[in-house]
Image 1: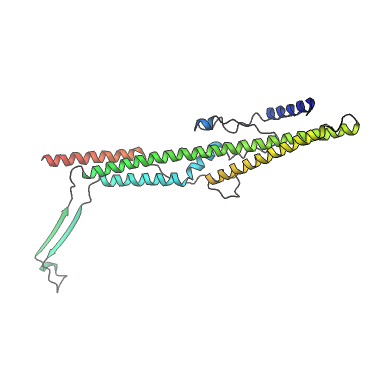
Image 2: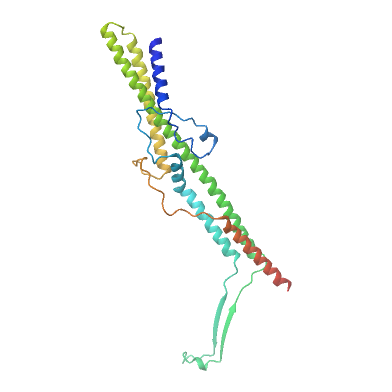
Length: 285
C-alpha cells in the first residue's frame, strides 16, 4: 500500500473514532463489579451505527438478570424456609386441650347428665432446657449460610450479565466502525478508478485497496458473530425467547422474591435465649 493510501486510511479511522467518542457504553455509570468489568475498554461506535435501545442499559440488564435468576430465587426461598423453621423451633410446643366423659350410657349417648364425671385437661409440654434452642440455633445458622450463598450467586449472575452487556456493546460498536471504514475504502476505490480513467494513476493501487476491503469484510463478519453470541447470552440471562428483541425489555415483575431480613434471624436467637432463661428459672425452683 502506498504512503498516500495509508495516510488516507489512517485519517479516515481517526475521524470516525473522534466522531464516536461520545459513546461510552454506559460504563461511566455502571455499578462496580470486578476489576475485569471495570477495566473493559469502552469501544466507540461509528456515527452511522444505530443508537443502542434506550431500555438496554447496563444497570437494567443486571437488574433483570438477577431478578429472573432461578438459582438466586431458589436460594432465597430456601433461606426464608430455614428462617421460618428456626422461628418454629424456638417457640414452645402448642398447648393441648383435652375433654373426657366417664361412664356415659352407651344406649343414651345424649344423656350427658347421667355421666359420672367430666374432665377438662390443658396440657403444655416443656422441652428439656436447651433442646429447642439448639435446633433453632442450627436453623438460624443454616439460614445465614443460605443467604450468603444467595448473595454469592447474585454477584455471579450480575457479573455474567455485565460481561455479556459489555461484549454486546463492544461488538456492536466494532461492527459499526468497520462498516464506516468499508464505506470510506469503497469511495477510495471509486476515486482511484476515476483517476485511472483520466490517466492520473495506474492500476497498481487497485489490488491493494481490494485486499484491504476483503480484510475489513472478514473483520466485520467476525464482529457480527461476536455480536450474535453476546446477544444470545443476554437473552439467556434475561430469560427471553431466541427471537426476542433486546430493545424491548419487559418491566420487572411486580412480585419479587422477598429476602430474609437479618431481623428474622435475630428474632430466632432472641426467642431461644428467652426460653433458655425461663427453663433455667424453672429448673432452679
